[in-house]
Length: 458
Image 1 (cartoon, helix red, strand yellow):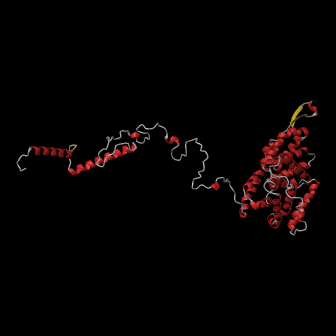
Image 2 (cartoon, rainbow, N blue to C red):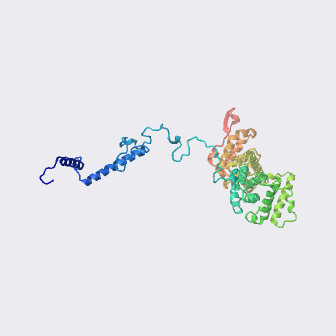
Image 3 (cartoon, rainbow, N blue to C red):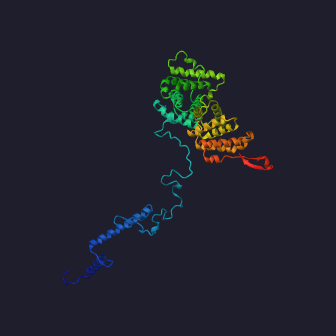
């Protein structure tokens, strides 16, 4: 239309409606927007609506509303979640689904192999499995120890024997050796045990003889024992370098083995006429002499002497009494000290002190009194008997003096003299001397007292 010419009624209505719609689209919330900003705002709204519907659809397992490509809802209306923030991490269904039971019946979760208390039965083998092997169906699996090599034999068996010297349990040694696959090294066990015992104490040699007797038959055979002693006789020149008395000791082991029926009686006779080594000859001669002495009543099981705290108490007391009697006859203090040390019972030396003092109380004359006093002084000076053991020995005599006095009427008098002399020579201290008991007696003071009785102690 020309300028100044009013539009027609159709044009005016259309124009008015277009202007009013355009003004409404451009003005939102009282702000006048351009066409470009209007399109950006619509895109943001559509994206926000998609995110809400996507979130609802994931919660409803695909049952929620969805949007088409142009952002319109296909069905239903998108409803924003109205649950409070405290239920955002709640794993319970918000649609009321399920019965509220635990997931997977309580058998789910990280690191869980099944519900508690569930017992699995034997699994059946699937013959259609491509890894199925018919040859392995009836296999029996068991642990097999590899054979023990020669280079590892000594460092494996030596700790077992050394530990046996401490506990003395032959059954434990047999169990440990049975767990090892000794193989051809089985015959080396006796020779190793004897070679270790040669450098040990007499009590350890006695334990070794017992070990060989207990192992023969269960772990080792008689042929293993014979081959092992054959090796010992061949190695005697080397053993003498470390242990000068090795031939005599090996001979004693052979005699003990024959007595325990580990070796045959013809073992020594089999070497006659074919021995060239002097050490081997000395060992066999020693064994032959000991076996001949057994016919006269000698006990081979006591050839190593008394030793070790594992011996019975009564046997130790008997050995100490024999030691004291031998000392009274010989007067050799060094030999008595050596025999006491060979007993290997330092915790039981108080019994030796007790028996020595009782022997003095029961003796007649001053010989035993002086010799026992010299012996206790020497043993105290060399610390063979500790101060504690000496004190306990004297205290035991103090406790039993009332019973001793029944058999020895002068026991109180002799004990008081012996205690005074022991204190003067430095065997005991003043505390032990003051503990010495004394018995009061009744006697008349003099003839002129008119029968007045005076209490006095020795």
